[in-house]
Image 1 (cartoon, rainbow over the protein chains, first blue to last red):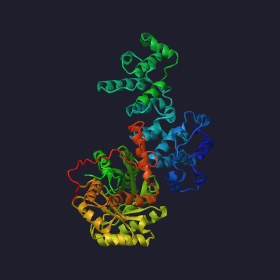
Image 2: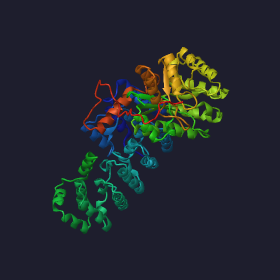
Image 3: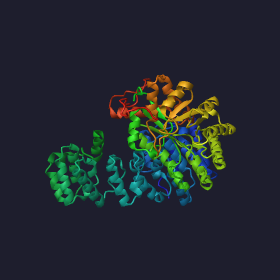
Image 4: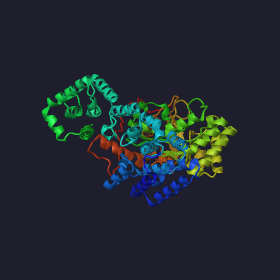
Length: 298
Length: 313
């Protein structure tokens, strides 16, 4: 029923929020969370508090220390509120205050918020998915989030969010990864990207690369991150092509993908590029490095 | 068209019915912010769910779409007078309103008021005035096309009856016949520059010459019908050309809209100045042109005039 201990989560968020809001803002929030937790609240109390949160606690960014990041990881592996703001933290605390013994009733209230949400609310709701009780009830909602065309909303559900890796079925997961590339967002911010690599995704990504090449468009070097372990004959030709691309990041991606493959032809291909091979073996080249550098170029 | 690079606000425009070409031209013409009142869609809705999704799109997708063109999008939320006449539906829409009125960027209850001036319209106009009072929000009042003068006066009297201060109410779609009554009572007087109906902008120039710029607001009300999303910049340009001072143009095409709807606490000049700052830094890498205290020039406001004429008749 729980992905994260609710008391630990809200205590942590409150501590962090304290540094980014006013005493009055915090007092308002405490009063609202207590009201909502009491079970005596009307649905309207939640809706109004959830909407109005920025008016009371503001929208200043949260400032997390190293220690905070570690605490977040302890509370929920992959939980990373590093890009959150005050209103988002407050909204998360409000929904975590809802009584949730009855999973369906809880889900209905969360869905009502989703169905009438503005952009900032959608960001808060999607980013809170990895903290909610009854996580198995929100798979359909997360898949809906992948369909959005609003950039911030897509980032909230797909990036720095451990919910998809932990709960989404393979097809939905693959769709999310592909869409991340499609909308030009960084793959290295997808939590669990290595853990959820699969053969179907490798085939989809190779097809997508071919489509881009056919159109004369650049292919992100990050596209090959989930591909390495599934290099077959067809994909081997792609990797060969990468080694001859002028963009160094694509060559690095080719070398790294080969090093992750158990296929002997991929190994041989890597042997044919001894300098790149040495850099991979030194641990100098990583997917995060490729992703970060690629982001700087765009 | 030459607006002398003024920043402009169109405080009444139905962007869900417009294209991205419109957004692009509006931005080029100097529009930095817009307000989209909730209205009807050309034919009556038959389900409350249609209203819910429409309101959601005003605070969600449409806001995002506008942001892609460097325009800050705000809205007012309400049950319009035409559709209020379906009483069974109206009851359910009234229940939806509290879900939306306190959302970020909602700057008022609107557009509400009278169409045929029926008793049912009156009932829901009053109910929404009470809601506006409860959440301390400005009200955007649509005045009727038919029996306009009487309907306008009645709208104001009902607002006063409900204890709403005149400076919290924008009376919209005024003309030469209604403007004096509205200004005399202390309400904001908005004018819709609409080709062929409502007001042409040459008439608007004469109104500003006669009444000045105090509490007078220009908008386009552009929607799914024949209308012009550049009405505000065109009118600003025409006013300047015809000798109205730049300060009066700034008030009627920018500041008064901000001052009236800004009473919601949801609309601040910094929303678009800071937003544009970020854009400009992204666009021009190290060139931080809009740092503290400077008079901001927002974006690349083109005053070259793609339009042949700045007149809307």
